[in-house]
Length: 102
Image 1 (cartoon, rainbow, N blue to C red):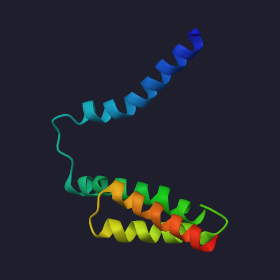
Image 2 (image 1 turned 90 degrees about the vertical axis):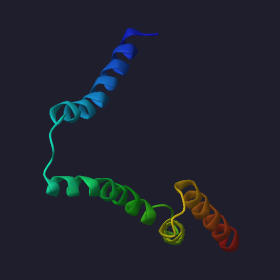
Image 3 (image 1 turned 60 degrees about the vertical axis):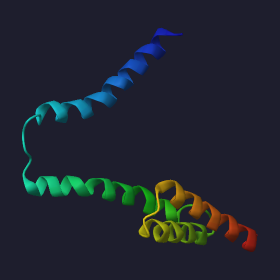
């Protein structure tokens, strides 16, 4: 294997690991203020929304693919199903829709 590739892999590992390690070391044994904790608890939901919502509307030429898939996933997730079931139900709904339309 080429040395450049090994150096690149090690470099990517370092820059991926450091952002996870630094806060862990800096805040070890310290309590964050309640406001900061509340904000940080909502970050995963905001990130998922920022990633998923544009994909719903840009999925295909027919915008209904995204709307139907997103709506089915939202309804199934609302009732407490696990992630695999949410994904499978959205895929099944889009399969039925593409069979009916196409």
